[in-house]
Image (cartoon, rainbow, N blue to C red):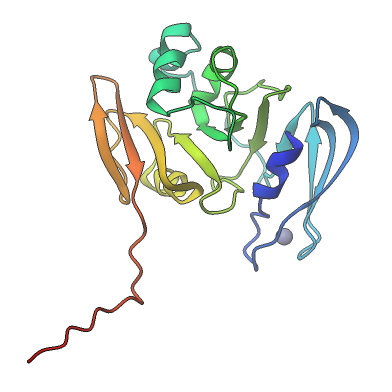
Length: 213
Ligand SMILES: [Zn+2]
């Protein structure tokens, strides 16, 4: 868990939003390898082990299935991913949800952008440049925290959560068979993927007064 990403993490327990307090027993290249994340509001503690921050409160019932063949880690897919997500520099961080975690090592070869995996395929540890969190379904991240997000073959709720955690103007990529979620403007698509940009949220509080006469 990259120390600079800790600011973007949020306690998944429903209560007022709060940062988490990190402590570590083992660090490597500014990454917490082993340690704890504590919530100052509800006092929940989340363990970090082998670079993986575990936010799960529910017992784990099922192992993730086989990743889609086209989502397996390979140079061609990770190159498309880097281009679609616009990862041309080291600013911010990119979120790879679910089976996209299989691309993390290949993507890391190509880009300097810190990578955060949410619920990757089983057995994926964190390492310098690649942070990992496990969740009960809602990514434990602040709204608008990520510069770009790759959505796996997931539910509409999961896709909506992905939109929420991406900053306005940030890129999102998803599988072609997943509908482009609300709040995302499609830019391009091919047989397997679409790419879009997060639109500004419309504020219901803004009213335009038009003077007549
Ligand atoms: Zn809490």
